[in-house]
Length: 446
Ligand code: GUN
Ligand code: ZN
Image (tube, rainbow, N blue to C red; front, side, top):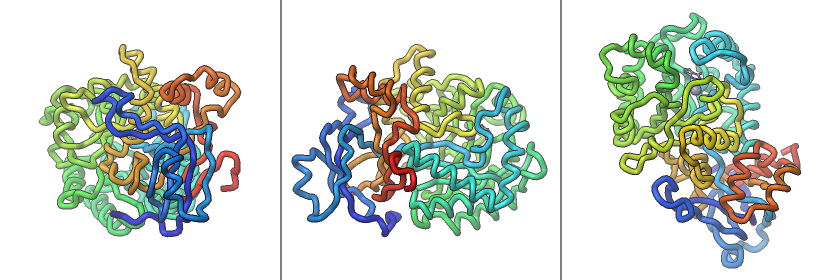
């Protein structure tokens, strides 16, 4: 276990606790939800020691410990973003293209700038503050091909005490010269970054081949070699996001049964592997994901923005072989760092496919589901004794319209639904990381 930041002062939070005792795709949503309208969370040394009804939990409050009063707001585990690119923050909302042209026209030139570590540090800082402002406390993050972009990111995350997963992008073909490494250089640079950052404070390394078209088979093999023998390491890549991309992969890897199989042959399909998107996958692939423990990151705002397609969430979560799944913003193809917005668009994609995404299911995906996808659910994603105190405070009355709509809410599920349909960063009253207040909407200096 990695220690929580030692500087965290003891604290307690009072408000409406919402968290999970089970997976609402596999049991009735109301049975999966832990709902404590007047709750108390007590934190010591960055971890939750007690959580429950205020009337019962107050007797555990150490003498003199201050209580932050969030009555009228929900206390949730911090959101988990399972797929996002920090260097793409400056190019969010780039007009007009679908995936492959969008990469060439906007993404690669933007990522070039991260050769400059000072620039990378500035953007990493803005990105992390942007996440915290949206209630996201953990993310699986792509840096660029430049090792210094990884140093910049983990340096800023260490400063804030956030639990992050990140890695250097590997790309040794089908990319501009200025963004290409070689299979050997990518291996060596990743190895050095793993030694420097993995398991240091709350930072975790992800071996990060961008996607099959920009890596040779040799590079994917070496990515597998980096992972071999260390099951604490993460792996992240893109999978079957766009039809033209899938056709390209079939051309480049004619011997593979499927896109997923390209990664599988290299030893990249395993626990703590996170595949972004997974829209065009078949039953065989989903069975393989289920049995291997690898995860899919559903990125609704990105899939709509790039016109990529509709993720089959309820098929993926089928009880006969559920696949670990979290939500990803996929900024800069995604259009918001806010998981409330991810939930909003996930609901609409489900509607378009004839399904109904229950608000309890949506909030589970954004918290506990994401933590399970990363195999970090023993640390984050729920409110319970022993868990890291990474929390977000949600205000259901953040705007005049939401205050009006809140008057009609007659259940916790309805409060959650209005938050996911109408909410954004204004709905995040505060964010706590490792028991420390790191964002306060009403006191912007923090
Ligand atoms: N596939 C390969 N690279 C990328 C990327 O940067 N964003 C998205 N959405 N898909 C990708
Ligand atoms: Zn992506």
